[in-house]
Image (cartoon, rainbow, N blue to C red; front, side, top):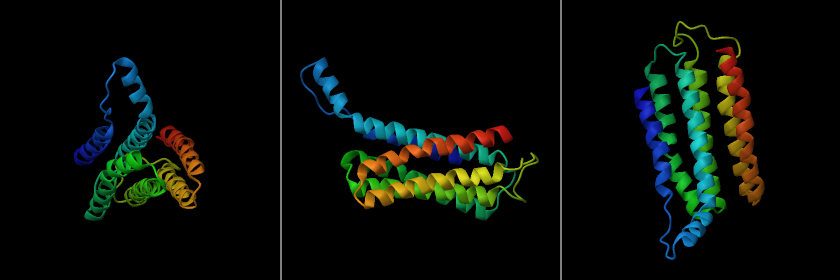
Length: 191
């Protein structure tokens, strides 16, 4: 868990590196204008920060039920962390270019992260890995379905972007919040 936490911390920290105020001259008004032009970058940063944060919370919740690991679970977690490390890169590409390909790259990376999180839940939340804590009915399916449906939302947004409907693709991403909130609240109640 310490290694995983470190990777999450580095990934979330690397997001802020792309947030640089362009050189400005002219005082407060020029700085304010420069900040306003950074609006899309800031929005992408905040959205991605929240997604990584929710992933970290889910990862901790998942591993609170796991008492032992094997090489398969460790490798699956390693591949999950590998894709997680790609998030700052994909976010940087999206915030710098913002075109269709950049959006699709971002959505595909996020889809992979979410699918691997679902796979971690499916593989690790079963015997012989479970801790002495009793896994309440519905917790395992919810911990699989939450990242799975998040992946579906990202994949849908990528497909819509591929079709050239960028505004709709952006709006589709907002579905991630209610999906995560729905499954997250069910998991917290069961725990």
